[in-house]
Amino acid sequence: MLNEKVSELLNTQINKEFYSAYLYLSFSNYFSDEGLDGFANWYNVQAQEERDHAMLFVQYMQNNDAKITFEAIDKPDSEFKSHMEVLEAGLKHERYVTGLINNIYGAAYDIKDFRTMQFLDWFVKEQGEEETNAADLIKKMNLFGTDPKSLYLLDQELAARTYTAPSLVL
Image (cartoon, rainbow, N blue to C red; front, side):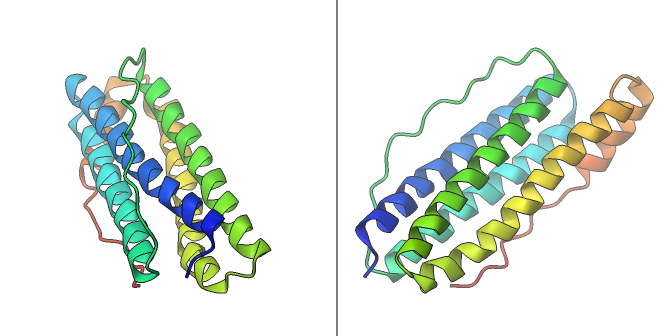
């Protein structure tokens, strides 16, 4: 049986992960409207990953007989002034999610909930990768984004990203 506070934090994270999927779909839509289908693809894949993250939390809660409550998912902001603004919003969001994961981990650590800590280890590593990927996109945009030909090539690079299911097994 999960600790009440840990269970509550895990449940909140389910809803945050679904929000992340919505947010990345809004980013994908923005880039699609801008004619940057590679960027749109990159964020569409990102949205799929976030949905899977939510489902991993759902499965973990179910495996531990914890009650799940689905809340309303906030509408993401959809007004962006530039490509860079979207990329920076993505990095800011990933840092926010890292903080949420760390908060859950801390709560589990405080009560010696080793099973939940082990479950969260995968997410800690994943968040490191997510922040690196978001920061790398910003670096590439800074290097190439002002040149149309280079932006075209970067868009082509991002179009090659394919969805890979998470490696975490519960």
